Length: 286
Length: 286
DNA sequence: AGCAACAATTGGGAATCTTAATCGTGATCG
DNA sequence: CGATCACGATTAAGATTCCCAATTGTTGCT
Image 1 (cartoon, each protein chain N blue to C red):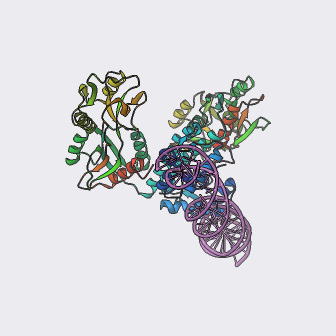
Image 2: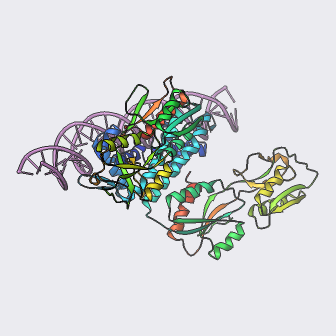
Image 3: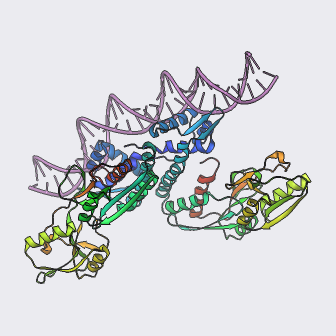
């Protein structure tokens, strides 16, 4: 019978996330040698290499791709158990806002973790545009919000700085002579604002083929090949592709995803939810 | 950040199952001291005792009751991952028969484990009475069957020997003057056969109030208080109670739950399913 | 060639795990 | 009662494992 130490799985997940042993080691607060040995030990007990080591890249092997989701699942349950036991029984309602233009593959993970870690916490999620969420924060309708916010302050924590990119369907071909056909979120979307600014500065004509408040509508417009849009790198759904710089489209800046909290302080429950979000999304974690 | 070793959780689950540190140690192939220290370490990292130690009993504390299901879940996923990685990609269909009078709280666990351990295996479960399953085994309609079978043979493995007990609703009162009112599975059920044998030898009059092929029907008859039946100790549903010896009912023997396999050999896939069953139910495991 | 980046390896010291032996405490029995 | 038993806690020492700093090896870049 084989019993793994969670440190092995955690190291594996970190390396998979960083695609770099040394950076994973920093994140894990241990030496690079340790990470190397841990991965080796995992690979030996599994009997398959987990990474393809290339000259200047490390990528998941086929076996590694199979292991990753399950390793993450195990770690999530493990961490949830520990949080639950060490934090006493916090209870209460927490309202969490999420900017609707920000991809939410992490949402199901967050809800599962909160659910099993803190059965006493009732988590409500509200999807709105960033500026609306700011209002809700001020009026204390939400306790925490994940929004696009350029400037840091006392009540916000940086979660990530994904680069914004132009996205089209795979078969879309840029025609430089015509105005670029854009599909945007309705006014108020931070990504849209960045995109418009970049286009204006660049000077090329463009037209807003579509303006909507629905992410699904944008996706269908883009996948039909009649429009392009802007997204955060790393949140691009399958079937879409990033338009490279050589197409002539202007370069876009990095966005700034922050976790903002209400200014009059967080309840115990909201603090736990914040910690869970930081664990799933924060830079220093997995 | 805290990272547990699976050995800690496994020890916890074993002690919880055995309610005895020394026996858990045997099962884990380590010394009693080790188990004691592991539990202590877990309790310290959680900040709560996991067991109430009485002098001749060990029982789960409130905190322990919370931890147990999650610990089991984590271990299941962990073991599934390891099995998957170490066993290559076995694939195929496996037909598993389960005696329908045997409680199946383990079925969902088994299916989950097989599913994530061996995505290539298609597991079909057939619930039938033990004798029917024997026929299906002979005609090779099922590969494996969990049945009540008194005598061991080359193609069977003992899973457990639960004591059979008389069961009634909580408010049922035995009236020794009247014939005992029995609710039984239809002819062919091994438990029924044992019960009838014991009653016949004992000599007290009884009548078969109900004979059915449905476990649900038996349960409702018993819960109404008009009948009593026979079950394996440990599979008694909530709301029912065991009739003690002093009620005058005859003592019942131990049953014999075995895992029987088809005689012409198991496929790779069926072997893996067998291993999973043994891990979940077998005597030497959890 | 020289350098930079990065993972693998190595050797030894530190931390941890395991165990046999022992102890303490109730229960049981003559 | 006192002896004994069952069982978990504790302890001390030995075995094992883990971890890190330093080094090596490989590859791409200039």
